Image 1 (cartoon, rainbow, N blue to C red):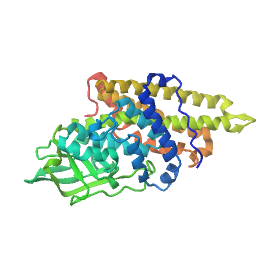
Image 2 (image 1 turned 90 degrees about the horizontal axis):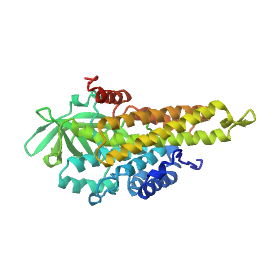
Image 3 (image 1 turned 60 degrees about the horizontal axis):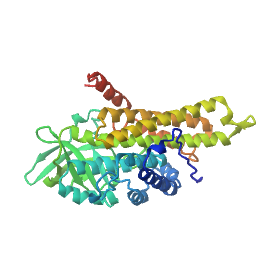
Length: 392
């Protein structure tokens, strides 16, 4: 494995806009990725396995619920710190970032925001430390972009609920200890329930043969008359807005994470272009390669500013769903385009596991459609600016 020589691009001196705490948090995550992720990630991607040994390290750098209050085991950091951590982890690998995003925004966030004090104390400290890992069950075999059409249901069975249904494309499912499951009650109202591994009738078969996110564990959630204790219902919010509120937090993290993947591809391509000699000069001296690299750094810089401003709005409690959709859509699209251009700069070498570019490109093909597809996020922005819903 080649040494990780990554140097983060900062063309507009954005570091000057960060606090000392932001930079400390980011640098700790960056060092950890260089030390623990980069040396092993190509091998795990090749063999399509999640490196579980990274879980403790993710917890140590505060990647699990960084904005969760310290009284519940979180780091009590702000939203920009959360974004920077996601950026650095995805610079290593989108699949590893997915693991942290799901744990933070889709498992810990709903328990913190919608749960009881008893639920917070029972689950959050163990999720923050990595003792418990979690997953989020919203997408179903027949309902992706239309989550409100979900068929998973639960009914009152006296001293417990009876849960039936299935969820698909669930990150962390194969090894999750807890699952935040969204299901309809007998009146058709959507609620969140905490399902725990070991409950009879609850299984998590793994999804195989993926070309993308190969170092991430993906699976299904199957519920066959699962008895869920009534105290495992999240009482703080119901309706489709409850899971969508979780997705706002996760999509925000993705908007930062995608920058990390783009930065890694750019840095790799720039380094290669300076070293690769053709026609007696480095290919970095040719106009077409300079065009590619100049456009890459321009788009990365724009995405950095977009994410930073969104983080400021999140800190102020002012970020809207539509603003988050815009950033998620733009930044992932930017990263995927940069990965493709970077691969061309490396030529045939770009498809090998000796470099990270092809792995990033394949991963981003998933990131651009999960947690809201590229097209759906466009229509969320369209609906916001016109007042007209085009996808209903």
